[in-house]
Length: 77
Image 1 (cartoon, one colour):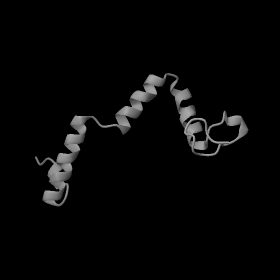
Image 2: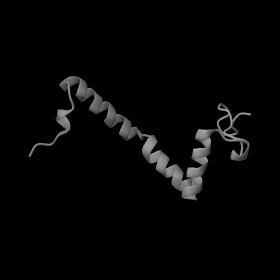
Image 3: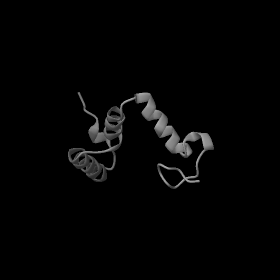
Image 4: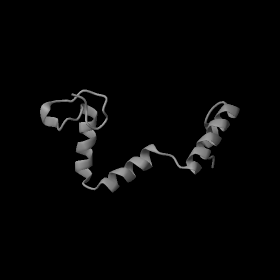
């Protein structure tokens, strides 16, 4: 039997509501935070990037390529 959430991995056990190990962990995390919107906001803040963040990352990577290291990010007093 495959996981009812991801549809890829085999189920952990009969008693796990037909979830695989990873999806069962996600389900338990959702239960801990009690409110799906809170967990979604945490995941969005940690895993997703806005257009502004993507542009900034590109600039940092370009500077790293030009200068050869990330020492330009350190502010000197």
